[in-house]
Image 1: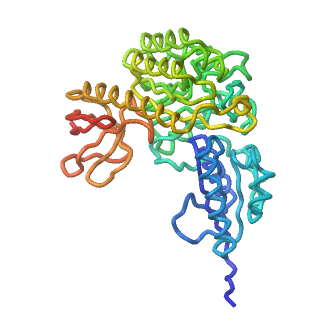
Image 2: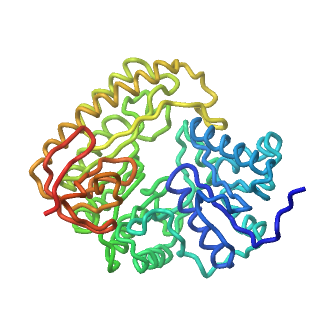
Image 3: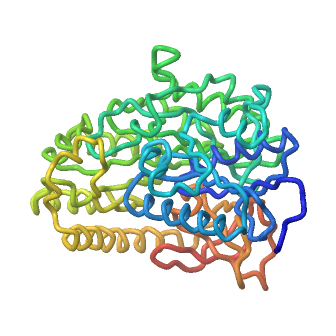
Length: 436
């Protein structure tokens, strides 16, 4: 009979889903490290006897990936390859009773706010003095900064409030402490994230404080780029645009998920905004921050979306000429208002509509990229891949946006450093250049 030798526990953290989940995993990692627990993140080695899966439960594909990952590790546990398996995150928060019944091999399931309990199960104590400190899972030169948790918005299609709870802002002082810690450890780019960054401060200061927060973060020595994500369009705090325009280290970039534009769909989606106000906001952003790149995400195939609604969305994309754009096909979410409606748009129609929007966007991106040819731009280099060093401009966020590629055999840069690059040629979603 094969027996395992007694050895010190080693924890492998597996992260699924969005950047907000990544931050949660980084906090867990740092807490375990501080407790002198041997911990790794997404290790490719087969040497960890405990696995913690941080799950995503946002849309069908993400839920399927999370469930498949849990099953895979549950089978590994049954085969004796690991000893303990824990699951945390959004999927676990939302479907704990069902998961416990369907996948009983998991030792314990935890929700999104149960970090102290998870640590206790891993033989560690929650250390309050570590607030603001974390071990990055991204390259050290950029880091996601979560400024709040949860969401108060009533969007009909979204289950985030069910999984993450009500909006809770972090105090400015706490955020500043975290940024200083990150900069001290080599971070140059701060990527601000939240479920709704424009709501920041309303719960603890009685008013929206995104502009003030941007001022504080951009003033910290060593912060070279600040990038704003997930700005909700309704009741948008326009004073934040003034700060963006006047601060040289705040990227001329905003990620503002608009989701749709027809009045009928915006009302059905409970977005609290109209087509006119949406178009006016896009115009205001461009006027107040010249040269800004606007990234948005859209949903096609929501219950009740007609051909007329979809055509209005296509016209909107053509008119606004967004620099960056992504499309989701609608999927039913349990517990949401839209989940009570008939899923009236066939899946093949949803996919056709998504493809058409992306076809329009591809042409827009190609045109805008070609306008960059001949320009010299500042690029932050993220990695070396094959024959190229690959980086991003201030108009691009990691993983989702365009990239700049320079030949490694004729250009020298260091990963994690900035360099000025002359753009020599352009493709639909990539730029090619030479280091100056």
